[in-house]
Image 1 (cartoon, rainbow, N blue to C red):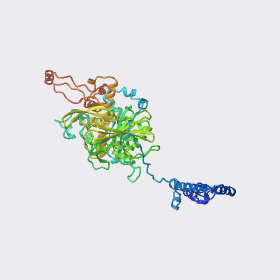
Image 2: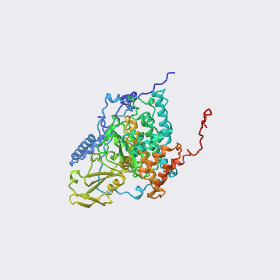
Image 3: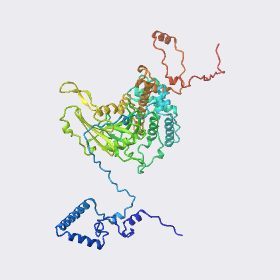
Length: 602
């Protein structure tokens, strides 16, 4: 028995285009225009009914009514013909249409928004603005005490183990006869030394091992040759598993991907803040690499571009390195364009329908993005470019420049069921903002310096501007924290430059989390460590944890006398994490070798 052949897309398309395949033999049986013989007025009339109509018109011809009926009938038919020709067009089938598969996408552009802007104020009730999420930190996070615990919370030991495994694998792949191996302790000490070098600036790396300029803690922690060897061989992924560049699944940051994924996983475990923002970050470098970008608006114009989702405190919850191939839309998500898709991807970790507030600048903002976020239960606000506002009714920049300083106006439109407010405000420059929860009102006063009057004056400021300025600077804040004690070690390997950047980001995040926990525990500000002290504590702990303290020898009499006259402070105590690491407090055996054959001269 022969099996039935499965219908292909071409067979289905050919059947749909075949006139004989229809039930009544007419392709356009329901279209009065496609069938020229179709008469809607005369269909179903019999000869007797036609004769009665003729007789009726004949009886009325004597008093002139027949002419009036005829004129009315002609005008009606003409109006119907004009209306029908403007609303419906005949469908013309071609051979090329029949050859196309039914499931192929024609690549249509998204529909252009036709908006009606109204000059009014955006007003939302308290229920629509109420925050339904939770900003309380988890009990595990609140139990953290020492600085190194905060750092290892965000830079987990599992990542250190991965680095150890991949580094040793690379050593074997490069030279099987090489016996050099690294351990978890070596990587922790390497990171601690790197943090110390960011605090202690010397002309070159080798100066830290110099007899005069050298740093004692670094010298006691690791030898120079070993440090340089680790810096040379450090790896984060298996090179043998890399996909070739010709493959569509090729990952440009494959060598560094495990670090980014692991850190993003640990960052997002921290409870999100109510106000979040998305902005760009630059990992400065001038190396020759396809990932290098140029951004003239940043202090470091050349480098690797990183998109960051951070809170108003500056804590970074998620990062994404721009490679040019990450613009992939998941199933169920709209394609909003390359820049707006960045916000959509970073916002995946935000809980839905809890009224979190998300801020971004004009590079990301578009009306479809605002609409998408509102339907996901996320309120949003951002500066916007004029060419991204369809049918914009705001006054032109040329007109607004003639207005007085502090002038503003607002227009609101319905974007597919979502009310979006656009506000333009004149300060030193003209700025345009779009929001789904903030508008022009309430207007407040703000102090600005006037060069013409050489004094500070009060001008009007819309509420949406104040809201944007108050909560948008999270990424810039963590940039400034990272830049004060930045790791400035140079390397020809691009993964190492990104690794140093993410070390700075992790310790800055750890310090911000430490301050957040101290605020929750109501610790006095005088007792909270600053950024430098926090970094120094982490560096010293990573260098000394897991090692035994060196045995002290008895000092000479002269040294004792000098020390007693000096009466300086007591010996520096190691960090708490080092004192409680359970190492160095056990007795250990010392071997004595006595030469019994040695003769003694009495």
